[in-house]
Structures are given as structure tokens and as C-alpha cells.
Image (cartoon, rainbow, N blue to C red):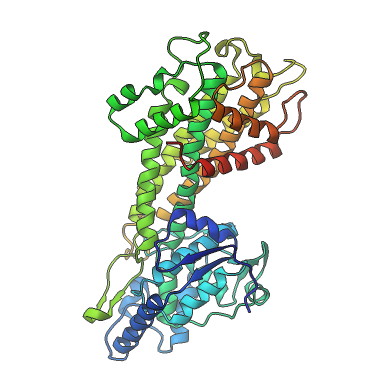
Length: 503
């Protein structure tokens, strides 16, 4: 029996959402309803029928890629080997197990649409795998995202067949050993099964979906911290005016203004601030709202990828059609990931500038430099700011769009490629780095109150401030803050998830 204790459940008949992908970090039970099973079986029967008729089907009777003009292996096991083994050439760091498992979940939902012609045992095997703590070991580099995520998904299939390496309970080991410890059987594939497993954009969709899930929280966190900074410094709130933001004409900007007003309810200006604040305060509705538009677009795109069919060819038993095309070409997610990447960098720029304002005594009505209780003897936020600068610079350097880097390959069969996989991985990286920047700003706001800024007057913000204060004591003497940054980042994620958008 599989070794696992599912803490969540999903249903293959219900649309997959970006937030669902995060459940795959732990064992997750995926229900396979009878009607879903039936359409998988029906499509499989159709594949066997047309395969036996002598009709040419890519990957079933032919070679792969530009070698489609040649016959494939006569035996199904050999065809499966051909599909997978020549793609086991990836390199670079291994994907975190949670990302690899999210990719399996995304692939499962595509195959369960009943258009890929996989055998029922492929679907049930992926369901069984997700119910355990098994994760394929997948190198990061290798996919151009054009004919799907061929190489990373080949590593998924390779591990499920008991080859290469895999993780079990977070430990890297030979895949056969990991399968045994998880109580799983080795997956047996024919050519169509193998090609269907690798010929989709499920790694791209998984990485982008995980990035979107974190970006949704990041937007809420940026609103929260901007409101907290406004209250702690005693700033005026005119920049959140309903009429002002409605006149701007962008709904997501107006939504951010509404969130700021909700957080700030009960706060009053100190009367000691300038008539017009720096843009890192005054323009937060416009900046965060615009980032929210990009997050929402990426969310819409990745939902389509997660619930569509990325494969080639597709099978339509109801019309007796086998259709060869390009539903493995990950251009939509490539564009969306690049756009999300840029939005996350700008949220990082905002957090970095807000921290810079906070540690500068010339812009905080005389709070001590670096928010140090004894400047010179202790340095408080000085190290955090330096690392913040390094982090936001790393984010900027990674902001070059991947989706315009098309480079012909594969004997010019893939003569234009989207590089969506790299774009999605970068977006996921940026979302994780942004957590550090927000945590640093939160610690700065907590320290600002300790060295003389006012405690937030808005009740909602006061509650959040207390939770941050419980997590990280004031800096009385210099101490390592790396662990605190991680714990505060987790706390901010939790708060963002609880409020589910203060609207």
C-alpha cells in the first residue's frame, strides 16, 4: 500500500487552481470520478483502434521531433524508452520536491481530460504517487517550453519507472528505492503513454501557478506594509481618496486604495509630515494596483493552462479524429510569466525604497539612523538594508524577458520557441525573493516603533503589529536576524492568506 497521509483532497472533475498546486508539497489525495475514468478509457480504446489500423500517429508509429519521417520502434516498450531516455540530459540544480510534485499534479489534470490517449494505469499511478511523499528528482535546465517541457517531464517519467533518482520524505535516493519506500509500483509505459507524459507544459504551468499563488499574497502584503508604514509615520491618507483613485480609471488601483483605507481605518495623521509624501508612500495605490493587474492576468492565463490539454497529437473519439498540432507550445504562460516577473520586481523596488526611507532620519521626523537605539554602538537595520539592496539588484538582473529569446533548435523543427519554462522558474524565484524584502521591511517597522515612532492607531494594523512584535523582539543590541527574516516572511504569508484581500 502507498505510504502517505493525505492532508488535502482534490477532484479531477473540478478545475485546478494555482493555490491547489501548493497542496502538492504534502501528500494530497486526488479523487478520480467515474466519468473522468470513463473518458480516459474511451480515448485509450480509440488510440488502440486507430493504431491497429495502420494509420500514422506521431510518437506511436513514428520517430520523434524532426525524426518523424522515420519509423519508430516496433515494440511499445522500446518506443517508450526512445521517448524518455534521449531526454535524460538535463542539468543544474534539482527542482524542490514541492515544485516537481506540483508539476505531476498539473500533468495529471491534463491527461485526465481524455484527449491524450493514455492508459488508465498512468492516471491511477499519478494519483497514487501524489498520495505519498515521493517526488521525482528533476534538473532545472533542459526545457525550451516549445514541445512541452520534454526534459523535465522525462525525468518525472524516468523516476516513476524506477530509474534515476527521486526524493522520499525529502531525502534524495535512487528512484527504485524511493518507490519501494513509498509503497509504489514501477510505472510501465508504452509509446503513447510516455509521449503523453512528457509532451506538455505542465512544469511551466506548475511553476507559474506557484508563483501566482505567492504573488497574490505578495500584493496583499505590500498593501498591508504600506498601510502600516503610513500609520507608524503618521502620514496623511489623502492619497487613498476614493474620488482620486476612481478618476485614475484603473480598477485594480482603486481596489488597492480600498484595501489601504480598510487597513488604515481609525488612524489619524500626526500633522508633522509633508503635504505630499515621497512616491514610495503616496503612489502605492498606483504601483501596487498595477502589479495586481499583472498578477490577475497571470492567474487567468495559468488557470487555462492548468485546465486545458497540452499534448500532441490529441484524440477525439467522438469524431474519429487524430489531430496533430501545437498544443504543447507554452507561449501564453511565457508572456504571462515575464509580465509577472516585472511586476514582482517593481514590488521589490517599492519595499526596498520604503525601507530606505524608514532608516533615514532626514525623512522620518528624527528617528535615529538605521533605527539603532545607540547609533555607532549598534547598527540595527544596517545589515538588513545591505542585503535588501543585494536582493533587489538580483531581482532586477533576472528581469530580462525569456519569452523573446527564441533560438531555433531540433533540426529547425522547433524553429521558434517560447522559453516559458525559464520565464516561469524566474517568476517563482522572484516571488520567493520578494518575501525576504517584505520581511525586512516588517522588521524595520517593528523597530521604528521601538526607537520612537508611534504605535499604529488603526486597530487592524495594531493587531498585525503585535503579531510581528511577538515574532521578533526589538533590536536592543545587534544580533543575527536571518532566522527572524524567515519567520516573519512566513507570518506575513499567513496574514495575507487570512485576510484574503482586505476589500
